[in-house]
Length: 288
Length: 251
Image (cartoon, rainbow over all chains, first blue to last red; front, side):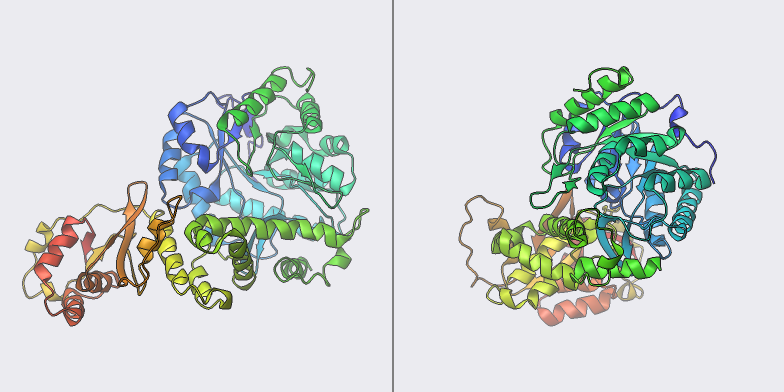
């Protein structure tokens, strides 16, 4: 259990300014042009080697608040956490001193195999105990709060007994972690699993939310599912859901994520400006 | 219970064996198989893309479609252990060497080894080099038993094929012809600036540096080099190592 559960109440963090996920092809341009951004977020696993990218990030760190988003701790794995990977994360976090550190409500490795995807958990008491134990372990090692992101889901298990939002809320309650609310993931999962996204949003404890993610998705060609590919602009219904989230809890750092078919940096900056405009009016303007 | 479920899920992802897992997935108006397939597509697409990012020249040599097939087979046989994708692919060259559909491209595995060496050298920081004056303080009795620690990014590759020329040619839009009948190559790869670089070495210098990199002492490394070429000049080669800023310590 960590104290100070809502990191974004820290007045030193420019929480009402939107940021972007910084991907390697944009690194040099950001370093050269220093566009106005609330913060930048990087994937931890891309900076664990001693590359020139790490050197550039250390330089950028002086000018931008930084969020470190880990994708491979596999907090939901039914085995011990990978201590080697955990130590590498700690070393990186100690070096970068980011404002936020986050991971996912998912698993991605089992039996020594890393599958590089955010795989679904059954939401049971067994999973909840295990997941909370792992979050506790990471927070104790890093000596800081972790934000946990809701995943984009394409299936759910027959033996799940808890709704996902309740699972997240209870994790936050037991461990003191915050919640990274990925609005696009809520929308995608709601369509794929046939539930009401607003009800999901209402079930999250608003005060525990420390960051919002926005991204694009697309419809699968041959099956009635939405795919969270981070490969396009944020869809209109997701902007509307974002506005609804802002009306529940404003002043949150909001991030634009883009991973596939990466466009020119200007496109990401434009999306971030739109998120900022909505945040400035607490979502009460036309979300278009 | 959860462990068993996750092992079944892994089998469904890598081997395509979904028999155990499908009964545990809710339909929600769609076949569980179709739902699982989304995850499977993502696992193979992203890991395949990671391999293509590490081995772009190999990909170009065989074309993207064939590379995708080879990557898919490699993934099924040797999925990643490291959580950092930049570290995935260490065994890809060995896999290609034994991959029957590649047997008509005998140089392919060595080009993959070269590409892997270039990639990994760019992830290791150069250390402060040792000045040659450090050797002056060593007594002549002790010198043969010394070992030299080299830059941690340095690696040594020998191939019967001109792998660096093949690699270089394939960085150009119009690939020039590479004469495969030219002699093989002995190459040193190491970190250079923001990335990595390489140089060809004479047979004796290559044998000497590779022996040092493996941790043997100066006398043994020199004997290895002399066995390759009786004209091996120890003093000149030591000079070369220090002027290349390759030595970082004495052992």
